[in-house]
Each structure stands twice: as structure tokens, then as C-alpha cells.
Length: 501
Ligand code: NAD
Image 1 (cartoon, rainbow, N blue to C red):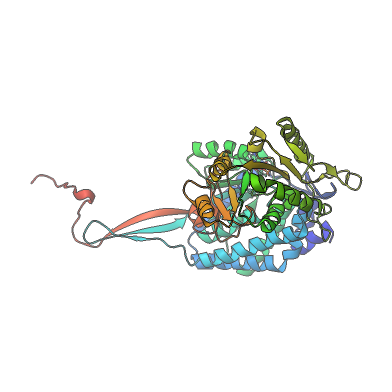
Image 2: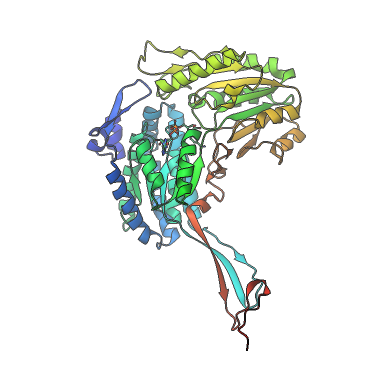
């Protein structure tokens, strides 16, 4: 389908997608997909004001009714899965299957949030005082500012949005300036859900398109109770202190540098398949992409040739074509960053396989690369940095303790895994002195998480958790309530405080 036809089907007004000042180019071929209007600081101010007003009423709407709105949004997504998925492919360059998978993830989180809307549970707590009861109540928090990255332009936003809406919070969304069209399409689909819902206030979803300046204004605004920011560690380093300065809340989902330990007992067939998907899928542009392969030295020479053969069989090309597994990098900067990293790896004594630009003749304005494997003598500085491209650093280890130490010796802490059939090693990997990441898997690659679990990581990944489990608590305010149903006034800790007779 052409981009214009997709806009139509998704309900995106023509002038919203084509009449603006910011040109949106597809990484597939460099062609212009549309032109969107960037928000001015004044526009953003008005959007936040509308969201604040919406909060006044939305917070009093019963949570299961708020869930109904998300159910309706989920239905719009179901009806337009393939079109929105295709727009994701056009705007990010990820293959069709993954574009659709991203929309499926949105549908899944809508289902999760709908159920959650009847489960925003607090606790009852034993009081130390007679005739007293204690409990915990969760209330809506306020306006949530969502800043999203280009590589999961809609799924990661929806993790925030679906939970925020059922928790009673309006959302002001600043999508990546590289992927504004999918954001506008989501807003159009949400408008349809709003229409069916009937009586929701204006301002539950505002979309502010722009770059860092708009992001910074959102971050600095005291009316924004929670800033949920997904992107590079560099961005998080700028955002976190700004939010802290005004005592706002912050949820950070930043860069990863995800490792896999392949132990001698591993099922190598399974390992090769998992490595391939997690290292070359999405052209290495997932926050959970596999970047470090730590292989026991006895099996290293059996694994690496198999892996290289698998790399050679992967079809690179137009992500809209059937059979293609690796699409383009997002832009030229990304390509240049990959080449710089490979040069550094070579300077550090690494042997590089793949990594060259391909299809330059067919797509002179797009950046397709062969995924690279860099066999490294050790974990040098470049291995410890996240390069957002398909580079897999392969290293050897002797014993498990060494593998574990190498694994954790990076600044990031997002996702991790071990391939082993030895139950002791598997458990040791998951133990308190095992993987230090937010996600730790056994016999599964580090990428492709399900929405039911909490998603996020430690150290420079920022510490945030989104999506499943009890991640919803970040979008609510906890109140501890003590109720005295006696006719006395005992004080806690047995303190006596009576005026002298
Ligand atoms: P990026 O940091 O360049 O941009 C992310 C977003 O932050 C964009 O919307 C951008 O406009 C905004 N931004 C940048 N500087 C800002 C500032 N100073 N104040 C406010 N907003 C600012 O990241 P990217 O290139 O779009 O995405 C790739 C990065 O995102 C990788 O590092 C990847 O690991 C990470 N990522 C993390 C997760 C996760 O869940 N942990 C998920 C997806 C992507």
C-alpha cells in the first residue's frame, strides 16, 4: 500500500501527514513519506494544559470504565494491525513480520491493561493500635509525559499509554522525530476509540512532534507528574537530573549491551537460532539486541563457523519483501557509527566478519549492511559501549566464574541469557550473584520479551520497569490510610501526649 493510502485507512488527515514543516524519510529507500507539523513551545504548553484539565475528570472515572476505553482502542488496533504494521515498516525499516509484531504487542498490552483496570489493588495492613485499621490506596498520579525512541515507535509508547489511561492519567507524547507518522496514526486510531466511548474528556492523548527542545520542555514542566523516557543513555543522563530538580518522577528505559553465555552443555542448534534472531533481527536496532557472545573455549570453534554460515544465509533487503530478514539501518549516522565501532574493534585486535554496506546501487539513499561478527581478544572498551547496529562481539571464556564476571562487566544492565543444559549453571546465572540485568533468560535469546513481565534494566539502562507485572504502580500515587474506629486516640510507638492535669 502507498503511504498516502495507509494514512487514509488509518484515519490520518491528509494535511496532518503531508502539510507540515518536518520531512519524514523512509529508511527503506530514503523517499519522503510525508511532512508533519512540529509543535511550538506554545503548542506544547496548550497540550499540557488540556491534559491537566482532562486529569481533573478522568481521575474520578471508575477504573473499569477507563479500561473500556483501552478495550475500544485495542479493537481499533486489531482492525488495523496490518496497516499500522506496514507504516511501522515504512518509517523504521523493520521487516513486515516485526512491524505487525509491534502492533500485536500493543494489542496484548491493551488486553492486559483492561484486566488490570479491575485489579489496581492496595493492601490492608495490621495496625499496632487497637480500634484502628490501615490500608493502602492507589490513586491516579497526574499527567504522564512519554518520550519515545525510533526503534519501537509505537509498542513502547503503548506500554505506557494503556497503563496510564487505566490508571487515570492523561498522556502527552513526544515521539522520536524520526518516526512521527506512526504516532499520528496511533492518535487517529485512539480518536476513533474515543468516539465510540462517548464521554471522555479532551486531552487524554496529546502528541507533540519535535526534537530535543520539545522533549526538554516536557521534562521541565512541573505539571507533568511522571516523565517516562525511552532512548539512549545519553538522553537519560540529561533527562533524569532535570526531572529530579523539580522533584518529578522519572521512568527511564535506556540503552542495553546484552550478553549471552554459551556453556559447553548448550544445545548449539538452539543457540545458533537464538543468536541469529537476537543479533541480526531488526538490523541490531533493538534495545535488547544481542551484542556480546561469551562462549566457552572448548565449543567456540564449533559454534562460530556454524554461526557465520547462518549469517551468510540471511536475506538482506527491502523489509516489505517476503523472505527478507534484515532491513536497513535507520540513517546514515547509524551506518557511520557502526563503521567507527568496527574500526575500533579491529584496532583492538578484533577479526571482523561482515559489516559492509550492501545494495548501494539499488538504494543509494538508504543504508543496508551485512550484520557483523567481531571476534575479540577480550572485552575492550568498544565492546562495553552500545553501538545501535548489528555488531556481535564474540569472546571466549574458560570457567563459569570468568564468564559471569565478563558478562556483568559493562555499564548497562538490560537483558541477558545463558544457553546451557546444566541446571547448576542455569540457576547460578539467575542467582543474586549471577546476571545483574533486569531480564535474565535461560535457553532463550535476550530479545523479544512478552508484555506480561516487567520490562527494563539496571545500571545505565536507567532502572525503570514498564509493561507487565506491577509496573502500573509507577503511574499511580500511593496513599497510606489509617482509620480510627475507636473512641480513644492512642499514638503510634506508645507515645503518651496528654496535657498535665
Ligand atoms: P535517542 O536518545 O536519540 O532519542 C530518544 C528520544 O529522546 C527521542 O524522542 C528524542 O527526541 C528524545 N531526546 C533526546 N535528547 C533529549 C533531551 N535532552 N531531552 C528530552 N528528550 C530528548 O534514542 P534513539 O536513537 O531514538 O533510540 C535508540 C536508543 O534507545 C538506544 O540506546 C536503545 O537501546 C534505546 N532504547 C531503549 C529501550 C528500553 O526499553 N530500554 C527501548 C527502545 C530503545
